[in-house]
Length: 126
Image (tube, rainbow, N blue to C red; front, side, top):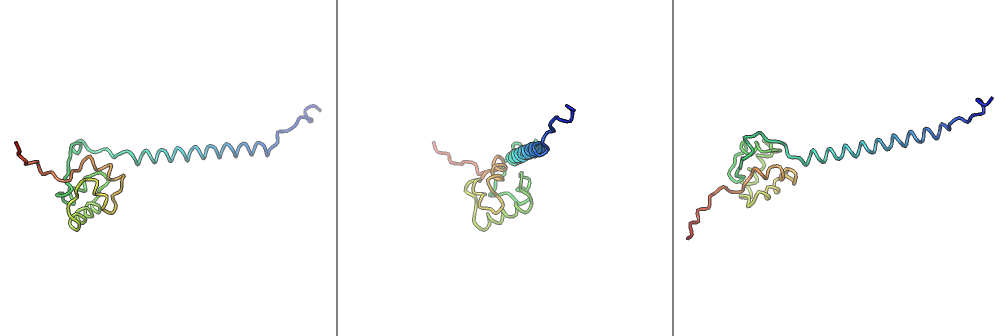
């Protein structure tokens, strides 16, 4: 008879705890996923070794040359050249943000490989 008098655990309490645990696990999974996405987007794509010391003059480069930059494909490279033709040379690499499709993320990734003018300094003052 003692066996029959034992209280059974309340099923609703168990289900509530189970749902709470599932909600917590889902929240952790979403948070982890968000962190991974942020890390993935903030890490520049690795370049082949030959591009490691590459410096492209954004005021002289052709669309084909510009398209080898990380995150710059043929369409964006054409936009850069069209913008340069329409509005004039870029005073500095940061000025590329005036081109539709180049935001801070892309600018961060391509800046190490770009210069705005490769003209050597010919000022021979003594």
